[in-house]
Image 1: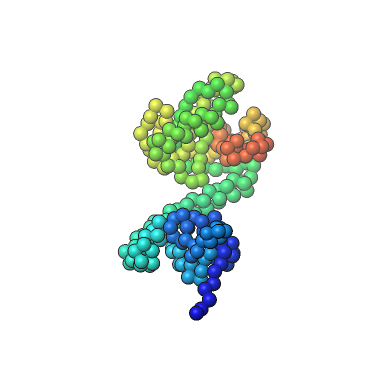
Image 2: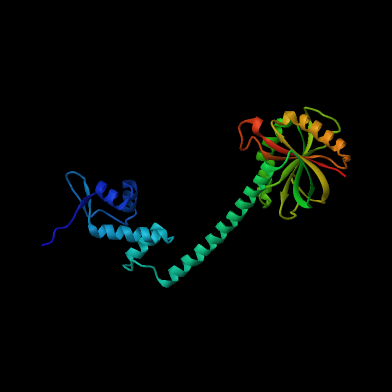
Length: 274
């Protein structure tokens, strides 16, 4: 008579490199119950055969099968999926792979764009391409109200309209006040989208033409110090013989949404020139 190896749940857990919590979950799902439970101590004992079963379960999980699907396989006594089930997993995996490849491409574009911004000289002259934007114009009580406006009103409406924004994301504001005012700020928020949509009461879609030449200047710090950068930018424009031919845009790279310290906020001021 051969000896039957029995392992307590802790020993089985260590040997099979799986947590006790996971083993209890398998048991609750009806997938892998202990071979024996001591009625006096409550100790759970596992055997070599259950080692093999657990190894098979984990192999199926790695191939994308859910615990419910694996349970069905064992209830049918097949233990291995049919060709049709494998084909379905192949199709599902190809779809996931396509999604992941798209995500990777967008993340790489975003990363490269951020690198370019980080390495960008303080001043540069660039052309701004034609873009489609989702626009919202409103008189807000003060500049601090812009963040909540974007999060609570503009963002949800763009989501409702199904707007798709190309990576890495490009948004900017244009101020329409004829003079500075700390309150009742007439501001327009624009965010680049992939295609024209149907206007709503909150969002209007626009196609903005190419700006052949714009002075772009990095501004690091809180928005209350934009005046310092505008002073430098206009001095640069004058010293290099340029002329301002359009309204400045202020684009936002890092801000309150991803950086707690206002001294590290990064914005780009873009001024059309010729």
